[in-house]
Length: 325
Image 1 (cartoon, rainbow, N blue to C red):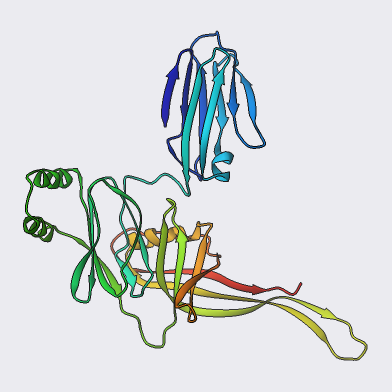
Image 2 (image 1 turned 90 degrees about the vertical axis):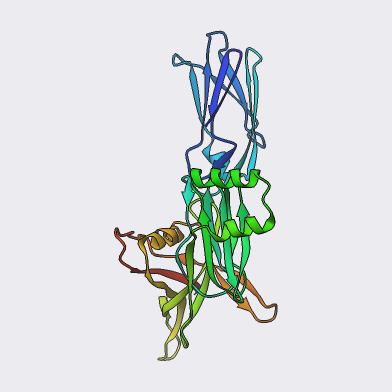
């Protein structure tokens, strides 16, 4: 939340980055009884709306629908006593993240994957490609976003520093170390590992892309456990002879699975069932590119277990439907 006071008026509202799944309120408070109303400029076809103060001396405006409709904008408020406020904001999908989101520890080997990392302090990420560690993220001021795993990577290691480790590294850099000293320092850091499991022969895999609970993009390969073709609806018609005329709707779906993963990994992947945007990435041989096809995740609930035992993660995906009626 941010607060600004000007003369007789105090305004409290959402931060510069607003999240579209949250309640985003604007609270206008009069500090004296002199101002009796404020004008709020919604922009577009709505224009300006006037609000009057009541005995509580506060006006509460729900800006959530505006947040969900636009990628950003400006909120302008004018009072009877000539106070003026202008607040710019941008919109991000999802909800406000916690201070730190670690990526999963287990993924299936394959190109085109993206992991989500959210952290307030320094972040180091390296990928093992052709036997050498390649730097893919070196961020000293925190990170909130998606990170693509390089093509051909067989392992990823990362370090999300706490405040003490961050300050230690910043003190080290302040001494103007040589490139070799920096390299040796990074090599001595203890990293967490993302294992990229090899694929099995004669097993089908699919690459899924979705928007995370915090508005970032995730991509991961899943094993296809079952592929289902279903007749979802049938119409029978009378004919002039004794034969049948039938129309049938067709639906194709599959179960996507990841076996033997930790509860923390299940939590990482679980936001796919609440994402409004989930895509199956289909490889186009003509363009040598993966192209998105929107799908529907029909699984409604994922249980995240306690403990350190490994579990299987499964979701049901509705891929295509062919409706004749």
